[in-house]
Image (cartoon, rainbow, N blue to C red; front, side, top):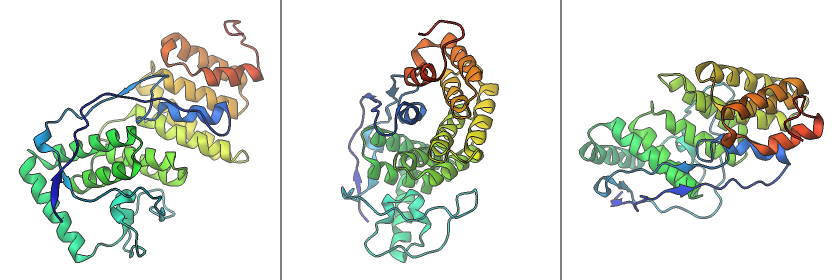
Length: 293
């Protein structure tokens, strides 16, 4: 496989959160994910890496919708299994290559890619970081297929890169593959050398989404609450965590607790308040403090 230079993405990308679908509580799930706004508005970081290092595999990104195979099996961990990819499926555009066994030529391509990166970067960790940043940039542009490819390349260089599992988890979340999103983000938390409170909130957000889709199950909201509690233990001034905790309290019909968590987040940072959640809360119970009408 030939290697060519990738396009430069040296620009700031403003992410606009679009609300569609099942109402304010469901829409609110998107805003704390790393690829989108933390709060109500945010700018995704650019790669900031010189153009001479932007060497990528020369694989075109298909625009058609790709069938998503089962990436993760029944266990709570990401599982790489030996299986043959369906005919016509390009595994470069499936998270972690779908766990499919690779042909001899594909394995050679991987080694050529890794060898080239060894020449281009000071370390494989640096190369992996570069490609994961590219993945976030492509995802911010809405190009999920290329983003998956970049995260996959990052994973080839370093399976210990948390952003690989985080980014792919966000893509699975946006594609409504919630079980895969949960397991990928969980793998990211397990891989992280230090507690990652932002990723915890992102994972809690996915659990909240599944809780909204499964109102008869209490497991998802309990998992979300646990993650948010841990996140706030690490960073007690993180308003998005309070916003999502408010949503958990609404789901569990703990409206007094919901108002308490909302006010805590509001007092910390008004710019990161989710007013869709506020609107939903006001529909259910008046503000005990009388601040919001």
